[in-house]
Image 1 (cartoon, helix red, strand yellow):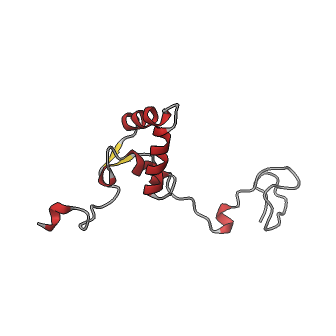
Image 2 (cartoon, rainbow, N blue to C red):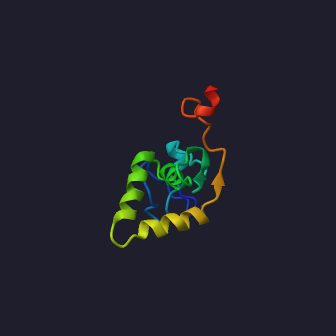
Image 3 (cartoon, rainbow, N blue to C red):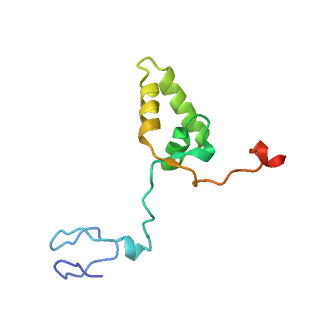
Length: 112
């Protein structure tokens, strides 16, 4: 592997070139391919009120129930910034109807 700026030979674990100091782009050599960028959106198929908690849970890759508990705690705490933040997120986040398929076990209309 060689530096793209000065052409100096680099070791496999180098993050910076020892000659010129340029950062080495190690992602392709390590086999790591960055995925598509995540989008913050309201997931309508997983909503209880507006889908804000589902959107944040997907964005931060965490459990939906834990995210709802966090928002509830922010709502109950004295400054009550949770309510204002939830309302702002409700208005600002775009809707997404296609993020998750509807679960037939949870969807009561599909049983009839």
